[in-house]
Structure formats: structure tokens, C-alpha cells
Image 1 (cartoon, rainbow, N blue to C red):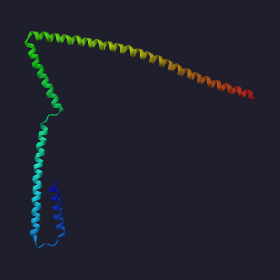
Image 2 (tube, rainbow, N blue to C red; image 1 turned 60 degrees about the horizontal axis):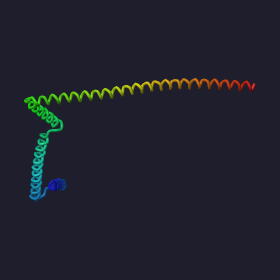
Image 3 (cartoon, rainbow, N blue to C red; image 1 turned 180 degrees about the vertical axis):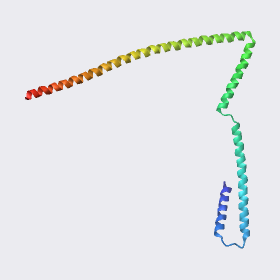
Image 4 (cartoon, rainbow, N blue to C red; image 1 turned 135 degrees about the vertical axis):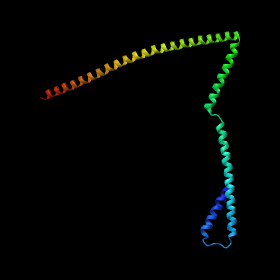
Length: 174
């Protein structure tokens, strides 16, 4: 990093001198040496940059070779499949292992049926609860409608009462 800042300062100084010195200088050797130094520094910086670019490219290639999560999951599934195939082939070889395998399958079948029965019972209970709640909702909605009708009827009766009260008040005044 230090050499890069030196390079920038040298280049700025070179261009500043070039713009300030409009009159040709007799002693160009000093300027030529400085120009050669700057060129050497630029060349060194380019070399350094190319090395860094190669290192970055190498790192990118290495990173591309690392499998991502999806690839790892796919590899894992394939390994499990191959392992299951090997285990199945070994089980298939002996009759005792076949019988154990069949018993395991029967046990799995029984447990699946038990789970299915429990789930169906739970679903039936929830259906009953749902229908009861729907009935309660219907009853409440009916009561609400009756309430609204009664309120409306009360309002009309209040209006009639007010009109009759006004008529009575007018008759008493006359």
C-alpha cells in the first residue's frame, strides 16, 4: 500500500512539474531519471496487480469447486439411496433377515393404521365441535336479527308516541 501512495505522489509531482515547467530545462537528466523511476514504479505496480489478479482468479476457481447446499443435499440423498440398496441386498440374502424385515413391515403397517385411526377420531371430534359451533352461530345470528327487528319496531313505536304526544300537547293548547 505504501508503494502505491508513493507512486500516486510521484505521478502527481511529475504532472505538476510538467505543467509548471513550460520552458525547457537544460538539465534533463534529472527529469529523465525521475521519469524512469516512475515508469519502474508503474511497472512494479502492474506486476503486483497481475499477481493479485492471478491469486483472485485462483481463489474463485477454488470457491467454484466447493459444492453448495443444494449439491450437498443431493449427494446426501444419493448416499442414503446407495446405503439402502446395499442394506436391502444384504437383508435379501438370509431368510431370518427376510422374516425380520417382514415383521418390521407389519409393525409399521399396524402403527400406521393406529395413527390413522387416531387422526380420524380426532377429525370426527373436531367435525362435531364445528357443527355445534355452527349451530350456536346460527342461533346467535337469529337472535341478533330478532333483536334488530325489535329495536326497529321500538323506534317506530317511539316515533308514533312522540307524534301522539305532540298532538296531545297541541290539543291542550287549543
